[in-house]
Length: 447
Image (cartoon, rainbow, N blue to C red):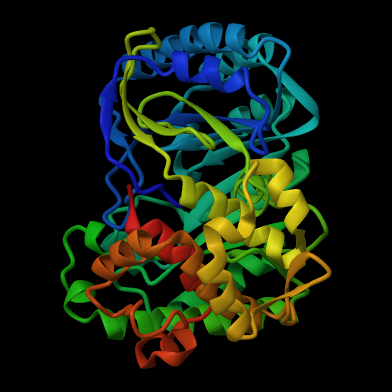
């Protein structure tokens, strides 16, 4: 997820910020709830998600109790305010026992009000998921199950220190499909240590045979976070070329199997199945309330926060970033340009003229033929193909301002040259890339 550019600051409580945010009406006054379960059974060497190794069953129970306390406190603040979705991520949420999952979800449902038919998404590792947990999740309203398979290649799984049985994956999928969660999503990662295009495609074909509703192709992007394997860092252009080839072949295979693309990484068989929380954040703009250790809270347009010390008490510690105004307006404006945005609507929403903030940037986009102005509205001029949308998202990065672009340049070791071009297609290095790179840059730049 794209992080704002601002100075970090410590604070003892997030609650005053939530209270202030609830008193205002903004384009981001739609709320989603995210719960972070930080525990993992093993330290996968490729993973950059915030996690801690589970050492005691007592830790799970104590952590669940802390989440229940936090639900009591936050639920009182949001009394009457609808949550649009619930996402349980990690870490590994499926490391919680079935009774703990039930205890937590029942407390959440009793304290928060959710929109009708709200999406409830639960992340699971095949090794810690069983039929009893699946039945518990189904009975408690989970309607989107995300299974983090990543790879079925034993060599790759050993290289990333991920204990996982292929037979268990198959059994999980069969059980989940029989229970009918509404949406079964399977995550795969492209570019893992020890992975080849051939082995990645072989995994993909086996997953397609299982007919999940959604296949999420995640490009390995945080190269600096990989532990125990220096080969990728020693040859980043070679790694990017291999990863690009994996994704290119995967897209062709999925298209031939009636999977259509949604966003940058997801391919789905039907019209439903998207990650509602992620889609709303990237495409429309919303606020996400995080619960638990390492959970991230985005209260746009005011503040970004991450929990650094957690016990479910008001004195839990958070790391804060006040959000840069240009960043906030750009995240809202970019998806609006695709559909067309009237200058008057921007003025009404933000009490400031669009051209006052983005005059040079809009002129640049107009000169490049990306966007145009007609009848008091700005609109994307291209076709909505992956290639042209990639160019749109590449060039509209100019709206984030020079500070963001400088940080992007540092993150990519000067491969990205904002002073020379905003277009990836015009830079030889980025000819290796496709539109998934847009998502990768956001993940790679970090907080």
